Length: 239
Image (tube, rainbow, N blue to C red; front, top):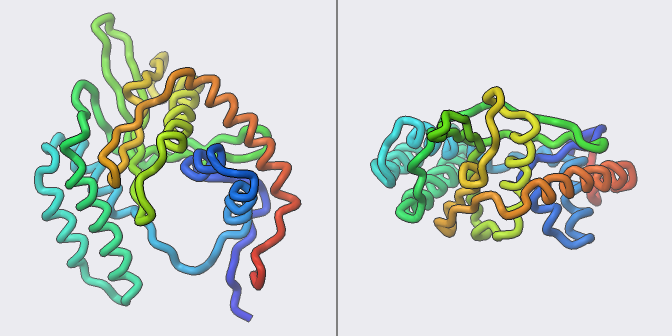
């Protein structure tokens, strides 16, 4: 029989999923853990092209929306080897176009944006959190100190990210960079720790009391680790 899923033996979760887990009901939490432990081998739509297009556009200092509509059309017209590839290109083009349409709402002035492909994975209470910001942010204060943060894009066909989920995602970035700054002796800043929602055009900065929320998320990683052993595979899964 053809394999349908891949087993992830040790607990791990992507940061956006952890943020969703924090805001989810108990039943939905179990579904999230199941999806992380038993990864479907069915091809799925990734937004890698769109995120790189947006981060390159911003890092180069281009205005918003600038030529993002043209870049979206270029993605849509990329040479596709299959119907699935064309659907991937269409999804990524839709992401860039949605961000372009919403971009009048974004104010990214006053700090430096740097593209990042670095993964800041770290284990907390038995669960590895996979954390890869789309861009790193920084600024130098008048006192010549460094402030830092991270920026992540969100886009979904199902709609805008909720304030609650985005708040968890940004609070984690704030807390993480407080413990592990990517610039020596730099401190995180809430205004530099952002989720940009292409659906709503909303900028989600780090919430108040981000360290409390960050510590809460680290504690919940222990809950995920406990669930991991006892979560059964999806019905009909083949390994």
